[in-house]
Length: 402
Image (tube, rainbow, N blue to C red; front, side, top):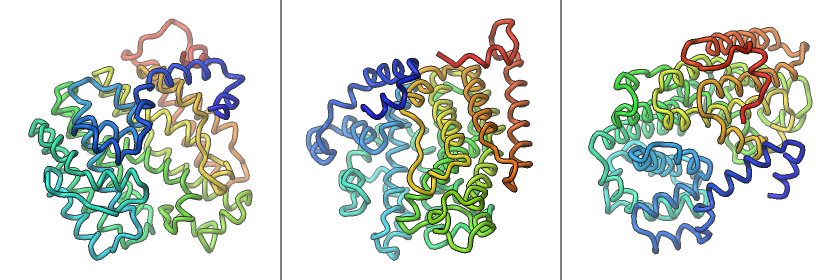
């Protein structure tokens, strides 16, 4: 906490935001006990929310933005996919048992007698699977329309994961397909849940491309950021088609993080990720419910902040690069509408422009892409849906939200 305060010491708004988020999430801090002990004390619903806090603190905070009617379905959707992901991620789990289970896991979603022991990379993940019956029982209380959406996405994701379990990400097409299976399908599933709930138009569940892009933008940003961690876990999700243009071996970037080729490769992947922004903007503009909007928009602005941070940054090859906790807190508090989204994206696009290197072989395409995004943001700002003063686009966007 002291380190986080120091990082934002010259940014008072970030300090205030950190304090507000900390106080707002004090309920999470009460459960200091291990999840394995909480499983013995809590009923099914309480266990599921405690598990959510343990396996993804940030998502547990963001889910609080949703209307009450949507919190349980989305919580369960996340936990079920996290359980599936736990099976996929455990490199010690025998692949002869893993692959069939990934393909059939959706059949166990509501099976109150199913569980899996000693599988998972952490104690919390192992506990999640060992006490899966609690998740299944809670899932069985959902409206069947929610269950159908969750089961359908889990089926598709499990089969996609199985397809890629023994397959490397070689081409850009492979990269897009893998990210679709692990994240794009999440975006599609959420659109389905929003439509079923009645908070959003029924047509949203048919917006496959832009729902997919919402997930791809987040997933690709995480894949870029996690280079160092994945390298030492013996795995790679950077497409061979891209990184072999800059090195003969994947670990060369870690050995020479400041080398022009290392940074050019990093920036090439950032350039690829930027192409999903227009779809993400189109998706967020379709949302009508303010709470649903905040739930969707907050991760997007945080991903944009992270993308700006990793761009042209050799620290990516030395460890995990994260945005300041104070900045994350501020984005969480003040991302309330499309106006705030436009401001945040514009701010981080300019931060990237400040770091561009004309010697980078990707510079022309990157500069063009960033310029096109700025034009898109200005058009959105000038659209009737955004309520603002008579000040110019440039004047308004010079002011940080909050």
